[in-house]
Length: 373
Image (cartoon, rainbow, N blue to C red; front, side, top):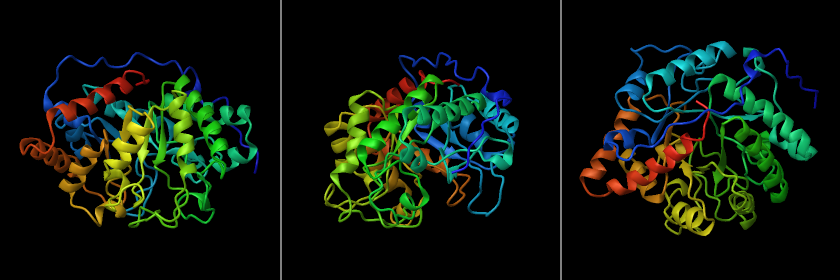
């Protein structure tokens, strides 16, 4: 592994970790606002104007979050949202300026292969979770995590969909082990490095979201492409990092996996949509009562097997608080509008209650109150 240098001259790092007070949750709020806060959406453009779909999503539909990507998968082109440090800072500032409630401004900045802020755009180099786990030194992991968190905060980004706490049980796993996204095959090493990562992000007012619950490390397939069943490969050790981090009060958010596990839910439904996996295992058994983010609901494992209204219904009933539509496996500029309309229809039909929406809204606003924005 080459030595990675983080230039001290990078202006975005200066003073970036002074967290600011977040939004206060009102005593009462209209239903449309609460529904909008449950949507996190991807969009196209390194610059945005009032003519872009994301403007209507934020201003009219009051969506609660956005996510940035470097590469546009549907068009096989770059840049999508990221071209330079100053450009990203302007973009996020513009989006936040449109929103009455501070947005979750999210990115997948794991390091290594999953590195949206690349050197080619003027950002510092990063290292993979697997490299950090192999070194397994607190000072090393904290140093790289602090630099990542400082960079994100300086850009105005307040949610990092990282660290990956999947246990590397299958080194040939095409979406985890093979691309060095897991810290280690040892769940204790995963938990320790994840804790150091999270604590450094918290110092900068950036939420670190664990993924992918209940565990993607043993899988043989990629949920971006289709259905992945881990019934025969999953192990209880995959829950160890979650239990340890939850018990230590270090979990800001959890992202679901779209894997199927018939041992955890005999119905064979995706874990993202499973009441037994999320409300039962994650919330009741492991004691997590914070924000649950879905993985991208446009990925093949979901899109190819469920209709949108079915996805929204099951996810909300299962305990998901933020429905993520990355708009980067397929691009659907109206996806937020359609998802929000589906939620309204489910409420009107009595399949989802206002009280259930209020629970997610409260969790979301509590987390936002702790973030730099």
